[in-house]
Length: 159
Image (cartoon, rainbow, N blue to C red):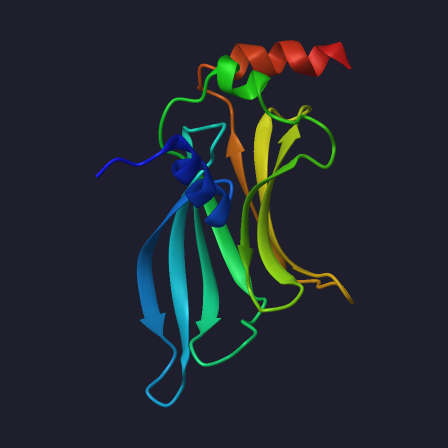
């Protein structure tokens, strides 16, 4: 079976910016339809970082709860070439997005580069386009000891 490049691009857009895999599922009880799902997400630009996100999925509900947790670790090389391609602005960039309801609610993971501390910050949060949401979680990946360490020292001195 031959798969077109356009088809692969469409699949990539359908499932979000980052590459993710379900790695675990825990039931919240016998009489509930809610489960905790654990997903592994590899940063699409900084491929040496993997984040694990846990969130609640309600099987028979149109809207999933907003609570989530994130833990990110270095799982491979982090290079200067990778960091040259990231958005180093104060607001960073979204690396993963998943719809959490039929209307207006989504889970996002944003990467922010902390120049002063030479660290990548991964912030997971829930958006509600109508009234906002305060639910969020954060994890950090220091660049110390990586191939990108010298790059981070040079870039912190530029500003």
